[in-house]
Amino acid sequence: MSKQKSSTAKASQPSTTSTLEAKPIEPLILWVSGGKGGVGKTTTARILADLLSDKTDYIYAYDCDPINPQFKRFYGAEFLPITSPDTKTADIAVETLAERIENKANDYIIIDSPAGEVDMLGQLEERFAFVSNLRQMGARLTRVLVMSTTLESVNLLEHAISNAKGLPVAHVAVRNLHFGGPHYFDAYNRSSIKTELEKQGGMTVDFPELGAIATDSIDKKSLTYSEAIEKESGLPTMRRSMIYQWRENVRKEFSKAGHLLGVEA
Image (cartoon, rainbow, N blue to C red; front, side, top):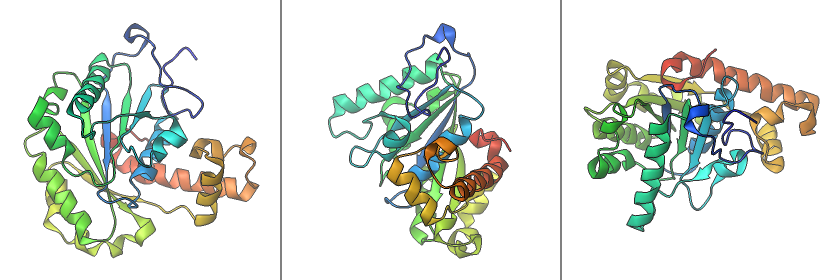
């Protein structure tokens, strides 16, 4: 493939196409966080990669989880050891990420942060002025915080926004409806941090649930969502239709924050 099809295509490897062959645009970095494992962080990163691949081939994906790298499994995302206990390894990883951003070889860079990650951006800012330098590198950053119905999710969001105060970071709160309808997120819906997020230009979107039968089918065959809706996937017709409808519902919902997520209706 002549264009830089990154890790969104499962069969593709991270590209080494030169900057001269790529589109010189303002890359959007989507930093997906979610606190504890199981909140739906990687699933959110996966569907973002899937939907964005509908509009561009210039996507790059990173998986920062050394224990359960599901983003790498489904999308061939490159492992990024930014949380490595070995400082030299972590520093090289950050340098690699910064070079990719500055080279503007990608429209979108999706980072699936590891479980438990809360203040990595703050640490990178403290050590390298990483976030502050994004404007100089000609890039934008949206932190996508995936939420369950717990108070912990509210506290994590509050910490993330406080941690990024004064920095060029936008925030999108994703209510994962796997845990219940929007009204189940009462702790967040009534919180002052939701008001503060919206005051700063951030947005709240809902992440519709995909049924267990379809999810299990995708998992067993290690399919991307785009692959799962194709006849070649081998999935039954109505199951493919179910996945297609869910994918479009997610697109519609995420497009409400399209300027922050890059997703279009």
